[in-house]
Amino acid sequence: MELFRPDTGLAFWMILVFGIVFFVLWKYAWPFIIKAIGERERYISESITAADEAQVRLQEIERERIELLAKAREEQIQILQEGKIIRDKTVNEAKQIAREEAEKIVEEARRTIVKEREELKEEVRREVIEMSVEIAGKVLRRELSDKAVRDGLLISLIDEIEPK
Image: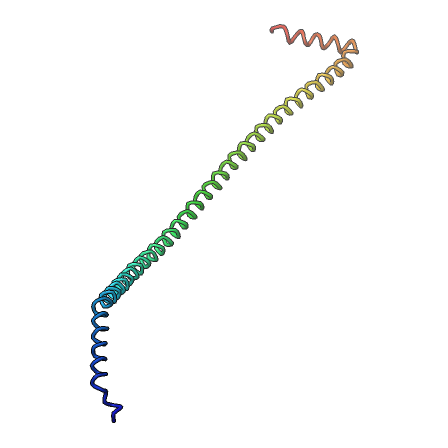
């Protein structure tokens, strides 16, 4: 049983060495260990706070991103609607201009047709008059070649000219 009972001298020296080691550790090492643990605890606390702030900021950024996307979609829809309105307006203006040009062309064609028709009528009248004069001349020459007819015609013309 001696194994379980330490010798008093050995126990004394063990307690003395333990006390010296404890005193040295308590005097020199313990403040550094406590300081390091405190700094580590502060660092962990600050890291947790920073992580919480980062999480909050990340949630704010996500909310802003969603708002920006919604706003961008609204602007896109608005721009598309404005583009459609402008396109429709431009198309309608082009159609109106085309109608006006077509009406001008049709009106000009009508005026040209009326003018050409009048010119054609005038030309036909002139030709009819010329033909009538030629025919009348030929008829008169033939009728006036006979002396009795010529004298009778002159007498009738003189009677028409003289007042009665």
